[in-house]
Length: 272
Ligand SMILES: Cc1cc2nc3c(=O)[nH]c(=O)nc-3n(C[C@H](O)[C@H](O)[C@H](O)COP(=O)(O)O)c2cc1C
Image 1 (cartoon, helix red, strand yellow):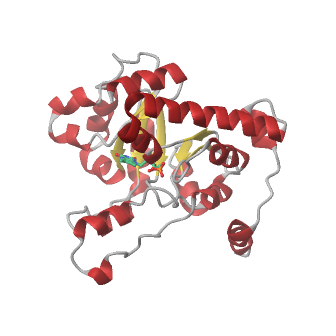
Image 2 (spheres, rainbow, N blue to C red):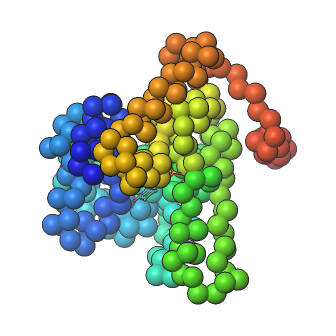
């Protein structure tokens, strides 16, 4: 995976690291997160779950970021996964209080992210009130951790698809949150540059890909992952040319046509 990290640096793509929970228990785990030496200019974010952050306290969480010289921290929300997981952490302490304490203390950018269930307008407003300026909505439609947990359990066939489809779809979550003055990352089910273009037109500032990069790496190694990411960038540029916009700022200003289920979602939510 190391060469892929260097490749990300070459393409100017940032990296969100995996959960640093192991580092809280074992400081020597730092080596597997410290990637700056391989790609010095690569923007990178550390990562920890909100529940683990609440339990560890701001001082220990700050060390997760400074210990790997990251540009900031992504704090992930994954209640559906914890609830679906046999050994999941079922305690849910006051998230707003934890976020307030972290935003006051953390060096660099603080991002709050979901992990495949999306973020509603109401939740986004609570996160914003806690001082957070960037959200990764990580909506439903791509990697589903409830599905992963159900596959892991495998015991009771009647429970094997429990909450598999749970969550706010990525596009709907963007519509819910795009006018709140937050910087938005769209992830969850993005597979092509066209998906990225649609998300940007719906309000995203940044787009995130997880599973397709891993798949490309698994089947084609470094060059497979690099080719996939280059293709995403090329396809995004093609779509921008066809739409008639010359930069991302202009793409953000196009008026998207919303049809089908997303239109139904928007109408339903406007009747609050
Ligand atoms: C193998 C894998 C591991 C992941 N690990 C984490 C993690 O440790 N912390 C986190 O916040 N999100 C994690 N994610 C979630 C992604 O960051 C992202 O929000 C979402 O899965 C993107 O959707 P996609 O996989 O459909 O592209 C992981 C995703 C995958 C596929």
